[in-house]
Each structure stands twice: as C-alpha cells, then as structure tokens.
Image (cartoon, rainbow, N blue to C red; front, side, top):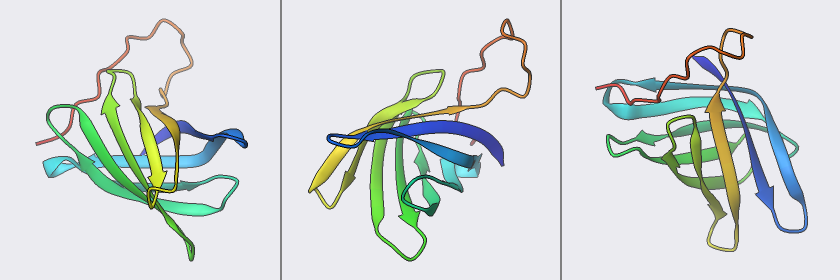
Length: 113
C-alpha cells in the first residue's frame, strides 16, 4: 500500500484532511485502502478505470458510507463526494512521494492491468 494525502470539504464545515491514508491499485484497477479523519476511521474500496475515472466507497467503521466519484488529473484524483444524495462536496487525493526532493519527476497515475 502506498501513502496518500487528501481532503474533503463540505459547506458550513470547510476543508478536512485525511490522515494515515493508504491506497493500493491492483490488477483490474481495483482500489482498496483506508485512513482516518475528523469523522473517524474508514476503508476505501472502488475502481480505477482506464479512462482515468475513479469510483470509491468510503466506509466509516461502524458508521455511514460516502460515495466518491473523481478523475485522475495526472497528479492526483479530483472529484465530488456524496452521501445518499443529501450532502455533497469536493475532494482531492494524491500520492505522497517517498522523496523530499522538490525537483523529483512527477509520476502519472496509471491503473494496473
């Protein structure tokens, strides 16, 4: 699993970061991982398609689920989250480079398979 960083935002609450976020893209573009934020611990499961679109379900442990629909920008995933069509907002996810050198080459996100 690779380290990622990300945030989601909601009107009236503002932007909230995700901590300890790890994601893995395996054969067939299947995505899985998890992390935590101000709501609690969660898992992520979903699909990374060849056209760059991404669908994820964020399942809070013992709580509600959140649908994430986004697009690979080449440097990360940008999109919209929703809960049962009642609440929506924007989100962003991006991999964390292993190196701290600012001039490292940026790697494009490409689904496996």
